[in-house]
Image 1 (cartoon, rainbow, N blue to C red):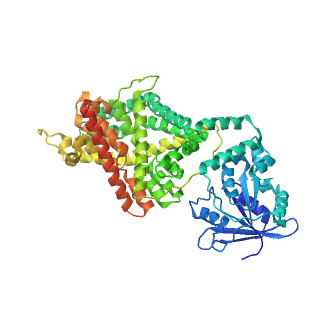
Image 2 (cartoon, helix red, strand yellow):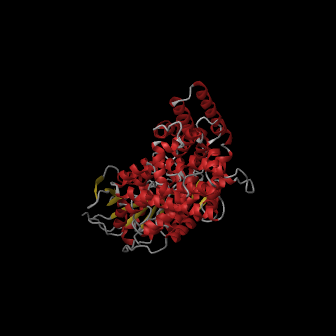
Image 3 (tube, rainbow, N blue to C red):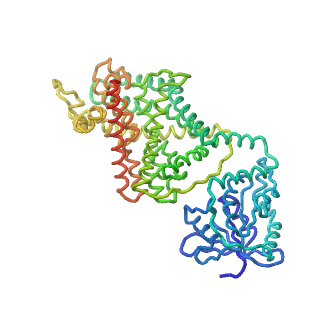
Length: 620
């Protein structure tokens, strides 16, 4: 072990720490791993102004001394003198990003409390100036009680001044203290960091002040949450209000195609396949493309403006109450599009129990595949009227369904963290991007990609499932003089009638039982399955054939059954793709089977309670 003075270079990720290390040490670097771990150790020689050599070690970037990964564990152990084969540093150089000072100062304050001789390198001051922020290093130094040196590591600015302060530190005048862990509360440190950062500001452009003013509202635990709920509420109102015209156009095209095929072909299997299976089946799902695009328009806008990260920050405190860290927010947010990428995104969560909990609750986020199911039932049974102040009842019900999924996920997470995935939750820090206007071309490209994905899904999974269902519904053929309908006589009908023995107590009928089977391939297939069933049941009845799926459902289902069906899909067991990716990410069948079992139990209980309550209060 070297007898040279040891200086540890510490800071948050993306503070420019590695650039400063390279500028100070040049080619005099050694790379290796810390003993017992695969974390890289970067060390180099630094010559002070009088030629004295010191050893500089570049520690992995971290947000706190409460580690959540092997990298962060190494940083903590080194600065506390606990790392195997590494002695306690003689001094710290803490690198902070001048343009994101309040976030970086929180960790700096935590390090200062250790009592080691410390210098703050106020890095990237050029970028802060470019963004309209000018800081006073002298004020920072006075507030922190240690030297603060402005630097631009990539341009080697401020390095001579930094070396000069290191000279003073090692001339014998600095008192060396033993490291001790900081006992101050995280929120206290954060508040102190914000106060010091504000005190150091000399000049700030109006745009930065506007951002700060917006964030005081957007990140406030009360007003911020109300703003988030308001944005979500507007989004779901728009899903119905803006989609009426394009949906009517697609329905008109489907009706015209159905009439054309019916007129062109004689009655028989081919016409039934094209009309009942393809046009009415697949078309009943494609019609909801406008609503899905409206939903993703809002999501893309919130991401592009920089608000989505702030929503993650707001949700962090709520998620901590159920045992999850804020790192789970992004995977769960991704699950609103589809649970498959959401579950894959949990790889960024270091804690295995935290990650497993996130995987298990990701299916409870209301994915876009549920939207066609919600839309057709809400459109059929919920009146399209205002409930006051321009608020549409249909959009309000849709909003409540999404909120029910989120609340359900949080409650399940709490139960899991107290039982099968018991463990402590980790902290979560994030850097806020600047607010900016979205680029129209980026939003349009995102919508185009979502449309292509949805239409490909309609042309593959939904089409295949619908065709298979049509075959099972069409064979064997019921005798012409039979009193049994074709659907009940078919293979699919017999399977559905058997399954309905289990589902009838919660208000489900044969048609719902039948639709739930192919819905395991993709949620939207439930809609195409119902459309195919009612199209075949209609036969040659012109009046029934002219009815929309919503009108047929309203004629055949009581309101409690429709509400129970909605409640089922809030918690419904996942599609095959989600189960497959869960098996891959958990390396076995144990947790996918657990997921299927608990989701089925939740869905059954929710549907049953909804049906029995609605019936008891006289809704049907």
